[in-house]
Length: 158
View 1: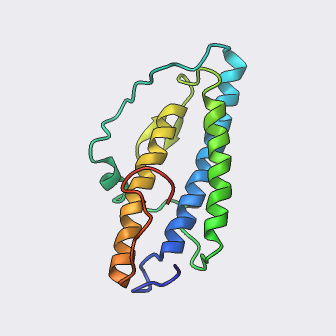
View 2: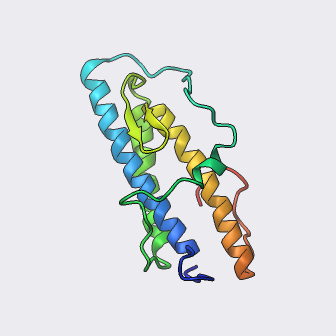
């Protein structure tokens, strides 16, 4: 899990550490936006959400983005990263459930590349981001000659 072909390559553990960071950051964003929405509205969450950007080919586009400050994986990411990712994912799932308790669609927070997104767009983006990194993990394992068994082709956790 920590093997790297070249010094500037990410290991599987580093990808998982990056996903942990992204889940934690997104959970904080969702929590903040949900609190703002709750302060100004008691309307229920919408049953349908309009996405304001084209998601066609988005996982590939996500993988072309640079790594942003605070989102670079730890060089020393280790086997323990799975437990840390699971804890971050639980925090994210709680924040997602809260975001659906009130209409948050008017609340926005900017993504460094995509631009302003409401909580529901952030939730969708989690899946897009993760799908791109699943492909990255498969590629790492393939180059290392290891099986990529057990990885869902889309969605789910990495």
